[in-house]
Length: 147
Image 1 (cartoon, helix red, strand yellow):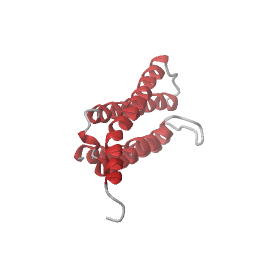
Image 2 (tube, helix red, strand yellow):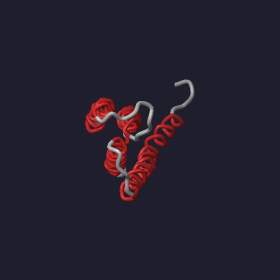
Image 3 (cartoon, rainbow, N blue to C red):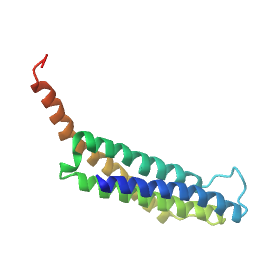
Image 4 (cartoon, helix red, strand yellow):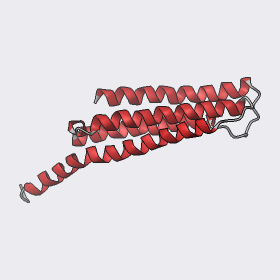
């Protein structure tokens, strides 16, 4: 549980810092207001996919004991790798846009790998969550009505 807590905290800090970076980097490079760059999306992605999702997983862990599943560490590391890779490619691509440079197919390919890891991580989350949900449902059925 502490890994989830600290990871969520780190993503909260990175999410806030990425918003600051976006604002200051675009100002410093005279990037036109309103023009699109992926830098503007990093803030939201880190806060939503990192901070909020991991806080929800922390609550689910408390309710269902998912960390007892052998799949839970696979979820944790795969999902976090996906968040980090996806966010890093957004920063790289967005920085190139602000600097007036072209992005490459390599950046898009690596970002795709990040998205694949996010997807695999989400599937692993549900597979790790399932036994706890089923066990809780079975325990409720085992208690006689009116007890």
